Structures are given as structure tokens and as C-alpha cells.
Length: 344
Ligand code: SF4
Ligand code: SF4
Image (cartoon, rainbow, N blue to C red; front, top):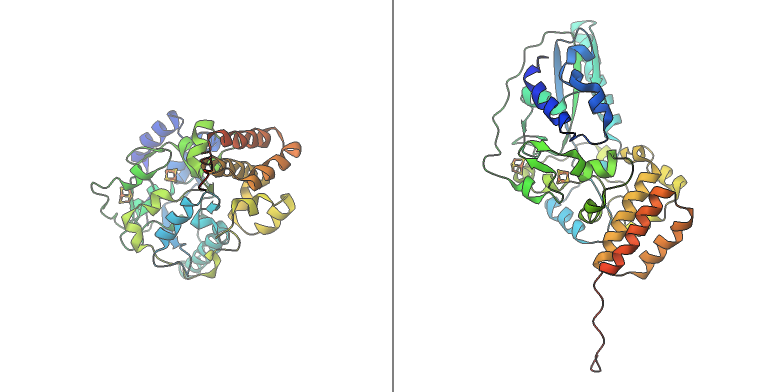
């Protein structure tokens, strides 16, 4: 439980917005300080109940981090962020939070309550940290000793004065693994993220062209990025979900870029039904894939990839055509095969 006076977080939020670190997430600017003022968002709110839900799939291997690092090394594989491989977490978490809110109402009588999960102008990590659900890591996510950071957050705003639960100590110490590993140096200082450089933002939230200078750094990441969490030593304690909802759906756990590139819009919509991925739409999905295919071509020329990109070009809209053209240009940076010698 956390109280609603987040005024000490307002300066940081203002500075973050002033530096335009939110990129094209204009709603963040629009919501301004309302995110730090729960009682303005929902008048009468006195407390916030904070909850976490682990999302590591039930059958994740013991060495799941090593498996993920390996996937990132294969340029023709498609990497989708672990949290997005199963059912849309908004639906799962929201239903559970609502059930919790209903049970609370049954216990204490009718009261004002509203549930959020990444679904409104809510300072989620700040509230979670204040309520003792974890501490803020240098990558800006909440994490805890018993569960790492592979969990979703959700909140119930209530007009009940509940006793706040105490915050926990922080345990990042001198570690900087998340900062050092970030492919785009998006963590510009401990606890400070420039979303404009973050691959999660670029592949999910960002509309329009992906900045050219950052494209090579995306590698084969086509939806989100887990690197800062994979590198975090506390994630060896990440808990597996008890729910089947977050089990990876085929083919999102093991598809090649070319398999996903072959999806037309109807197939994209069918395959991503009930998944958070559907929210980005087919156009952004293809844009991301074009970048990843270009990155694969730069590592090694591949006639199949080249032909698949060329085939899509005539019908592509301006944005996609530009990304395809960029991808094809990566061939000029690809290593050339050494000339065959007489000895073979
Ligand atoms: S999600 Fe990826 S790009 Fe974003 S901060 Fe973490 S490591 Fe960097
Ligand atoms: S990688 Fe290190 S610095 Fe980053 S969140 Fe984890 S413990 Fe903290």
C-alpha cells in the first residue's frame, strides 16, 4: 500500500519531460503531473494498492537467460520480448486486479476503486517502490530480491485510508550491468532512461521511422528488448508464472525473421489475437522486421532475405519502403566471401 503524496517525485518527472526523453509518447507530456497526483486522476483517492505478477513462462529453462542471449546472437532469428510472447498481460492483470477489488468491496463495503495496469497516467514504479514492492533498479524498473524484475505491475486506486507498507532497501550497490549492456546506451545515467534510444520504445511505442543511427543496434529485436533485465544479477531469482497465460505462443518463441515477414495483415491479426503485439499494428511490425532483416544481411548476404525484401517493395507504403531500402543497402556492408583458391 502506498499513500498518494508523490510530490517529491514531481521534480524528476518534470526534468525527464523537459529533456524530451519521452520521445513521441505525447500523452506523457499531456498528462503532465497528473501521473504523480493520484487524487487528481481519480478524485477521492487516498491510497494505492500495488500488485505484481510474475511473467516468466511456467516452463522457462533454468538457464533461460543464456537461452535468450543465444537467440540474440542468431541474426536470422526473431526476438520478441519475453513478456509479450503469451497472452496480453493487460487483460490478465486487469481481470485479477478487478477480482481483488471486488473481494475488498465485499469485505469492507462499497467504496471508490479503480484498477490500472499500464493503462493510465500512473507513476507505476514510483508507487511500487513506495509500497515496498521492490526498489528501483538503475535501469528504472522495479526489482526485488525474491523475484528479480520479470513481473508486471498493477494498481488499485481506493478512497480508503490504508496504512502504507514500508519501502525496501535498494540492492544495486556498485553494479552497472544494465547500463553497460544496453545496446543503444539508453540508460544515460543511473535511474535515467532516454526512451528515444530505448529499443522497447522504438519497436513498440514509436511511430514513424526508426532513426537510422540506431537501426544497426536493434539486431534481431523486433518487439521490445530484455537486455538490461537479462544482465541483471537479481534475475536469477525471477519467478516463473503459475498461469498458462504467459506461456510462449508458437511461433513467437523460435520463429525466423523470414517466417514472420511472410505474414500479411490478415495473418498478423489472426496470429496476434489476444496478444499485446497486436497493438502495434502490421505496419510497425513490418517496419521492425525490415530493420532486423537488414541487420541480418549486414552480417551475411542471403539471397532469400534479399528477394523477400525486394518482393515487398512495390506494394510498401513510404515508411516501409524506406526501411526496406535501408535494409537492402546493408548488403554493401556485408562481408564478402573469400575468393576460392585452386586448392578449394
Ligand atoms: S530495454 Fe534494451 S534498449 Fe531499453 S534500456 Fe533496456 S537494454 Fe537498453
Ligand atoms: S543490473 Fe545491477 S544496477 Fe542494474 S538493476 Fe540490476 S542490480 Fe541494479
